Image (tube, rainbow, N blue to C red):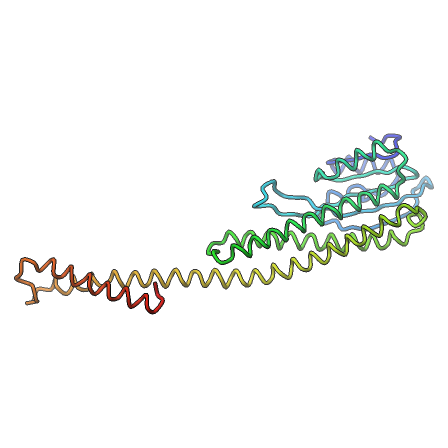
Length: 299
């Protein structure tokens, strides 16, 4: 339902509901329904509706965690649509990542905020949270580097895969959002608000920082992927080497027992201590082989 207020939030609405709202506002359906597309990209559009009212659309991409479990957390992007129709702002998003809550409360309290100011505050919040997520990603990478020596399971590879996938989504969002920011910074309606110039500059700096962190993170994860494969392969080779050495040692008593089990005259065949002599011989040879394998670094 469209209300006569300075801003209004549409969250988690179905496609048909958003289309009905767009019809009442006389704006294209994709202005609001695009938030339901998981692959929607950041963009900016302006125009005039059929009633002659000016419209202005800004679509931004924000990060959304796919799990509350940090060990299995993966980030994807979703779109938030901010539409200006005359002097009203309409915000549409499918899923709320929680960090918008305080910002939306601020919009409710401060009715003096202009459309341009609200746009930039949403932009700042997205960039600020992106930096936090990237800092977490870099911490995860450092933890993985510490554990790499003991990695012989697929667990760390799956962890690396989730980080690499998250970084790919983040890189796309940061790049697309910055294109929108650069266009906005040249818009007269934003340039005419002195208080926004400093904020736009800060958001742009955060955007460059985020891009730098993403590129560095992707470079390191690429190197870690190769390193993990080599370490896991080396660890498995070490395990196989030890198992092979143990097999050789266990084979010695089997061979000796097989020889003394033949139905031909053999040493100790008629001795009451024959059994214990063969056991002792097996132990002596096995111990000698153990020391020899250790000297060759097979154990």
